[in-house]
Length: 556
Image (tube, rainbow, N blue to C red; front, side, top):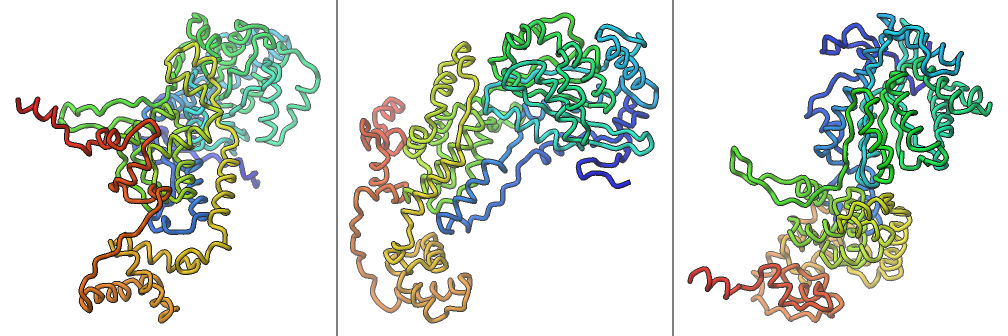
């Protein structure tokens, strides 16, 4: 029998834990992973080649934009969540083993509930639930949903057990409906099952105007019929107390899923869902669960010393930004991330992962557009003011540290990021218009420009190498850039032998172009100074001025 693409045939492996042996639902899962395997599986793959920094502006924009989807650096809370998810799925199947009859007992109990419409009815009293529940709480943009998606991708979603003639759904993820009703969420549940298995549960149950009291037993029975390993309900803050009958009724709904039906449930939401979570955490009726993970933005902590080696250990913020900083497609980028830029980056983003990455992406694109070709404190502030206005209130609330204010603005959303990139792309097109190519060296020849940039990086003088590069491409048009480089370098070296070194004429650079100069150039520092700050202040801040007063105190 050929299976649909989204359904995999079950392959059984020894689970490694005695309690899990003999349970086909567990033996068909991905093996329990070590920490190193988890890190390897979660880490995003970004294709990066330093030579790409010399490509034309539009190509580099595409390379920079890939960071939005492909960059992912595992953190401590990601590893903690993976462990909890792994245990929840497997423990939930312990009490629903098709080989020892426990699954059939749950299904018979479910049939009784569907027939009577009473969730308290059961045929087999000893059919116990081994399911757990977990709440994940954190402001939007902190990576809750994206991390869960990556973790779930390490499991097959649907498995077919040929021997049992049984289709197992390992996980099912639902987004909470925007109308905030439990009834709509039940409808979403049936629709999601239909999308996976090509069934017609939504038409059969959801379109008959059943009440929530009728839908919940039906939902529970479907969960057992397909042995759902874990149910993830995202955006739980959308649940409305008025539409769902109050906080107590909403909590009863989730408690029933876990304790009565035996279905592990993960609820994900922002601090706006605090009333549901707080009542859930206080509830004595809830079975032994995993409580809650409070998913906070990264903290800008100072490095700590390793008690064994005495060496400074990188904090998560420093390790994360150092890794992200490598992926720059800028011609004059700073290889080492300075403390000034890092501190500004944190202050503007408040450690919210989504904003950290988007600010970095937009800053690179702005650097290309302004031709500064590097990320500076001034550039980051400009991007924040111009491009991130929609999230200013939320980030200001995070800076305040006021829990009530943070709850008020907990739905952090950075809308239309793709549109912003397209707008910047259009502006770059205008700045680098083909009609202006004659104003640029080498008449727009990208290979010649690339060779020029490589020679500049080797500390060759621009005004000397330009005629040599033009000559090389004229004499050897078929040679590659790699083969042309030693030829041009030989010519360049011979210039110094043939004639006495002439004093290079000082080149007048307009003040508006000072931002393109080297980082150590005083004119560049002047371009980075705010209106209310002086170059002296910047030099003092970057330790470019010798502090005589403190020196005298030290020697005194």
